[in-house]
Image (cartoon, rainbow, N blue to C red; front, side, top):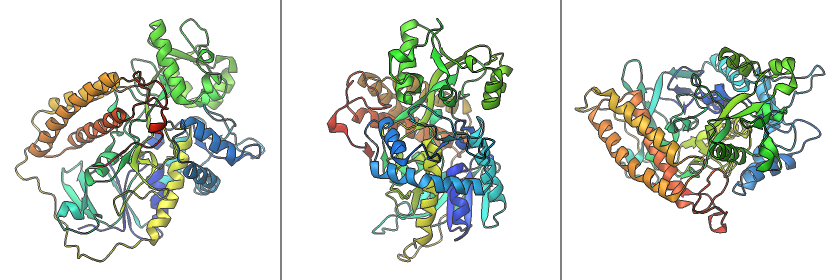
Length: 527
């Protein structure tokens, strides 16, 4: 039975950063369900927020984060993560991350929505890809790290799952599906770190890659870990609107560099909704775009950066320029058609400020976790910051933690498929996948009502029963596991949204349009 000191699920900035530090203290396995570079991190365009300029301050960064979070952030967590940012940035640069700099060697900082200063470090408009490259290079040089590509985590193995009757339930290992062979491996470990990213694919339209199916939250939930604030799903205001590109993000940095949001009449509309205009926090901008489209009957709005000139645009946004040009849109000459799309999961597995969950031996870091940093809405580019800071803290905490020696842990049982058959009707899985995503888009989107949420809840309960039947009747595949996780996470989002009888941040309910002090707290679910 393969045994590791640490098993990490996910190969983005959080998982890879943790792996590099944990490898100093023991053996590490990284489980990633596709190729190693396939992660939410690699898709991140804008950058990483941190105070690196003398004209900026921690206090200003904290204030911006608290305002964006609609008064639901944990202020102590915000202050500590912001303060740790500069050191973690230096570590990324030490392993080879090439952020953009001016000729004098100073960082080329940009600004994004909700920020009161330029504090976004970036690598053109492909920051995540550059960070992923450097981290993977560093991991490849580390002999104590085993990288299991095309392997998908199935479920945690715990005391409770094995019926050992321990006083405190804790992690003992992980079942992992090898996509190539169809075999399920049993990995023995006392420390599992979830770094699986978010759940954007639970919605019909998203800026996320296909892997973002909420696996980490679903796995943790089934094992009994607490989940918090899942009603707060961030819709990025500007996803490219084009029939050939359903999930290409138009970075907020374009608006940070002067891009304007205009309607089909060419008139800028954001000042009618917020004094900060196109640089208001994302929840406000996304709702404004949604309202503008409904008011005018338009299928999209536009981001116009043409006034900055061709040289500036091509130099600062080469990825976006090339992708749009290939689709027949020259962004140096015409505005970019955009719509909101599901982007970021602000809630997740509830953790402390070192990534520890309510289940002993299980840590969660990055987008999959809910630390209290984001509150009811994430401030732009705080996600990569949180991931690298929490990876550092979790590695330090777990290096000092020793699992209890009692009770005696027997050999873990191998996976048994029993009488399960090969899936004979994949069309059923694909139909249910599509139905979940459509009902979430229609009923649990940017604007909600209790009636829509109840309809979603009723249908999801039935879908969950169908998926559970598939799970036990058929041999597992990646598609079946993703469907199982999607229906679980969709249900958690809806259940959380039904509990919050107010509008706050990313959760806007037409039946309760105002904030309420009664709900000035996290929404915590316990299985």
